[in-house]
Image 1 (cartoon, rainbow, N blue to C red):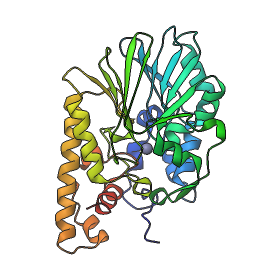
Image 2: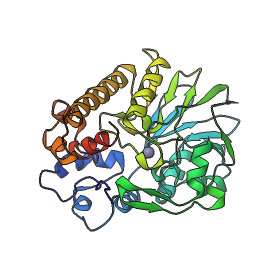
Image 3: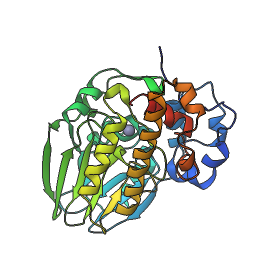
Length: 322
Ligand SMILES: [Zn+2]
């Protein structure tokens, strides 16, 4: 099959110590105990972890907040037109997410934008739609949510979403909304982390939600099964940089949820350096395993390699695309 294994949960050297403690509590992903449960799939582990993870609220500016702890970082815009959410988290987080959303104001949820189709961003679509949200996404996100999707590198088959969880409103290039005094601009990246990623810009607040084109301080996952690539991730990073000013608040899909242009630049430069390292080794005729053994990410591992996408897993993802 040639599929890449999920992060090496059982391999010696996998740093379970580093994904424990408060870091895991904040991200809502794996605990060390779960990481040792190697017989179970990564996706199941992430869902189980979300079932008990607390939700942390970060208030930004202009009535925009971030909810952290249910899969991807969720942005919330509040106001008299009803709440707008960017991403829906994982369904099992519903009780804790509902409470955190209610604490931001009494108005109902009126709109939900999916940055892309992945379960840790769209699994909550069904309950949020039932709560009143109209769901907006790129047309490829609707396509992926509408049918069975296999993600080879997670070794997981996702079933089609229920009809109510599928975005009713889709677009191809750009889309805009005006709600709660805020101009909200949605823009398709082109193929990046998947083939359906969109950015969401809160114009007056000067806040950019970059979805999973940006992972702050950790190596990113790249979903080749639904159109992602390392080159696409770099192009999206360039687009994010071009769309940001020095004082723009940038919300990553994963990692520390409040970020900025300087950190984004570091992420982009890391992607380029590792792509070049892995590309050079592959051009020399090295196999995937030989490239992993050569540690082409070594200079970056202390900062970026302490999460689920460990150095070997990230090297394999980059190798696939160079
Ligand atoms: Zn994703």
